[in-house]
Image (tube, rainbow, N blue to C red):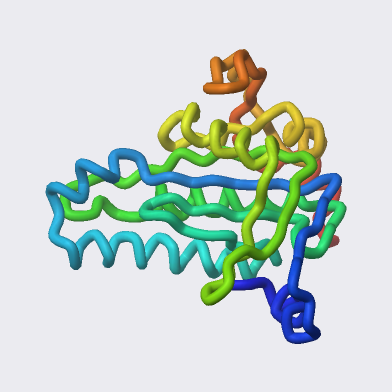
Length: 209
């Protein structure tokens, strides 16, 4: 699973693809309580659940023009601003995260189980490239990526937790609720916010007459 532009570069003969981006945004989403679910549900039910969720998330990838990086188990990783830089990378993933959250909360109870996600977002510099020989993988590296993952793991079920870096990029267009300082593994205390929605004033100012 490679971005179209990366495929073209490989076809043209590039043998080492490694790009540095000064500003991009990364999102991680993780299904809360997934391990107990695997013990309670049949294999077909687990696949049916993940397929329904991730297929919808994939449709949002196309809607917002961002890049799905990978899924590992119940973890879903997306990036914006790679491999093609864009000035609104944080805004694009903020919109997508809100759509993801709305979809999750609109779903009926699955097999008597309420499904919820933790979502974490961070913005900043990172490195992106292709690894592998027989099986290529486009992946991301750097502190920005690690911190985005920590935003998910230290987050709250049903909430979208963002760092100051992301908050500063989207605060004019989105409503954000301060969470305060959170102790994050390997990072110490970080000030974080919950992404709550689109700023009503911005929605009105940008509405088409």
